Image 1 (cartoon, rainbow over the protein chains, first blue to last red):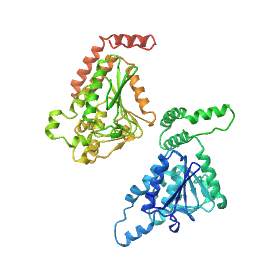
Image 2 (image 1 turned 180 degrees about the vertical axis):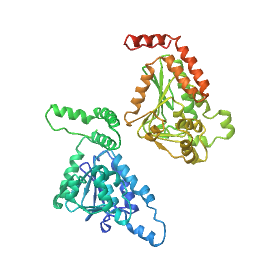
Image 3 (image 1 turned 90 degrees about the vertical axis):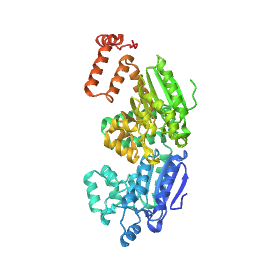
Image 4 (image 1 turned 120 degrees about the vertical axis):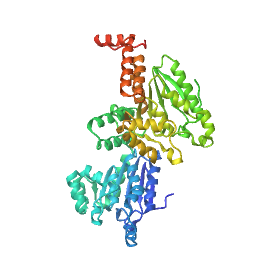
Length: 264
Length: 258
């Protein structure tokens, strides 16, 4: 199924998804959209996968939509139907990432722009190389932020900063991204891969069930009122309370040792 | 009670019917309809059953009528057997309250079944729709009437003419389902609501259900007259005395259905 535009490797409970069109700075064509969606579906199903990492091959994370398609449509006088592209390609990926009940770490290795930034923001956590740069590039192409970026930017940065980023589209370097809260960690490029691996493997050893429920509760809390959030927490806590990992966590606490979670 | 396509069980005052054709997404077949009617009859006779719950699986409450079965039927067969009409008739006039526990696909006949129940609790994964138009037919189990009464003409038209599905939250906004809860909790929540209903006076519950349903059949004046008559009737019940005494004595009432 996978046509090779996304490399997949599972190691120590971590599914590494590497966007693999390095000569195009990992721009998205149809195949890469399909491959990423299929790989996410498989990661979701596989019980041995307890953390997913999204990263890019070469010097880019991803620069988003391949503008060559837009150029040929414009030059041949055909209408450019971008809404359809979003509906078919990017939105299902973002929705699946948000709903997957496993932690997703974005390992932002380099330049990220447009829908690439959207997908980085759709990850639950982000670790970046100090070489990474972030471009909310849509405005420079006369477009609006898509693939979820309007949603994430307003929630992560607040409306004021999101306006600045969305309307001016100036590049953001890694240290600035860290200060703004766009990424959670930045490491020097020579240690980046090792640190990302360490974080991912730590996530993969966590109580996956509780992490999945936490992710659901947090994703919901940003869109509902406090009463609904309280009620939702209550239901999910009932579920988490019945998990094996909770029993192990409590046991380890009283035995004064580190818990060993199985994800069940 | 042993059935092939459903599971009927008792939990305290609840009669629980679980649609059980998981490989067919709980599609309604003639067999399932017959068994449903039979389970409903059993639970009606059982005085210990004060409220019912009808559920499917997490993946599908019911994805609709069994299309393979339906495809072979002629208009005459449909007419002579009434197809699923005996079920719609039975469930639509059922005297005891029924809570629907919805999750996953609630489509076509599945939605029509859900809409003939009394209170709907939905998992957040629920998708509801009347997609009959996509296979060249239209809703035939009450969908055009009940959906229109539930959500109004324009939303019902959109759903029935385009076949578009709506999610749980949208359905809640439209008043079609009462509660939306996480997928792990919907069945428990439905039972909780059912137990709450089961703790009330069965006489009052029966008449209240009847009176609410009359709102769809009668003009306002006749409906109000009907309500007043059954309201007076309750003053002849032991449960009314028990309820009012318990209130004054600040204790929980024990209703007997008398």
